[in-house]
Image: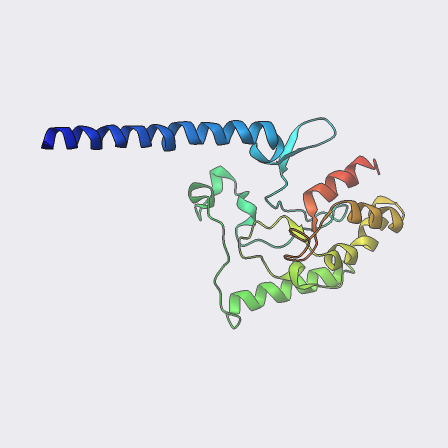
Length: 200
């Protein structure tokens, strides 16, 4: 068999595989995602009562006002840096991740002490996830314990019954993956949107 025939066969095989793997397969997956899972395929975007997009159910946001359930601390401030004042370049890099500070690091110890003091001052029993950041610093969930620890504060500020807030927490708790992996977690953005829907 001649070299030119072998080279032609190799080129044709490469082109066929390229069309299948780089064009057909991705397009089929995009179409399948849009048909079977449109919400997830488009970023799991949540909207407020006015229908305006406010964020993704998969990415945490900072909530610090007393009328809302607070989210986990974030080393990147959930990438909400002001584009005009982004000295650390968070928005340019799209960075996410832990601080990588050792448990004995003075900066970490100072932040943990300050966060713990703020929580106690607000009448909230500190939990690990309200004090420490997640591995990605973009975790949208807090534990049931952390959500329940904030009920009294939110109920007082909004003038609602604690039982109403307990029901909202239960409604916005994501169960274990496949029923066995991980722990149940409360999606803070979903919970706060449901809270706003109460109208208090």
